[in-house]
Length: 229
Image (tube, rainbow, N blue to C red):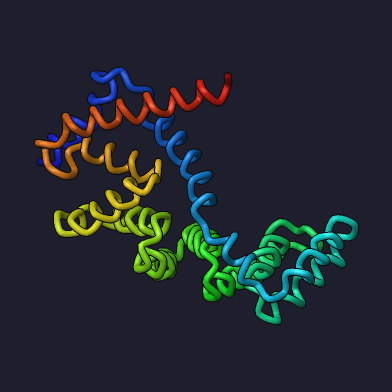
């Protein structure tokens, strides 16, 4: 069975006239990044923040003197501003207004995640993946997935799919991918279609998986053409 699945995976792209798997995956994940940030609660975090006036002041200071602006963001973050926690984390990560300190960046993204900011949850989880802390990332994304947040559902499925593809694990992974795909995740749609086409969810789904990949590729190309006009 595994050998047959591998054989299917090696020739389905050429039969369907699709671009390379690598190119399709690159397109899917690029679209997913934009979709993820559009589905965060950053606006809600801003509206609920009790320090709005001071945050605006800090932002103005940052434009003139990044170090002075960062100091104000840090003070507000330490006072409990979830919105500013992400700003502080970003500064530590990029070196804007302060020396780069990736450990402090990760810690502030963690604090923002724990304060309920979904963009910080997303970035924190991905940074843990970059650090090969897959167990930690799984815990983070489980938190978001439990609330039905589709970006977290996708990344939790991604982690589980990376770990194993046994029949039992696939039964857990598929609903997460399907829910995220229905809610608009390009990467979830791609991963689901790709694994169906490879026969991971049963040989009977290969043809439907290939059709889904063709439809996905056509939609991506149509979107690219529309954006260029």
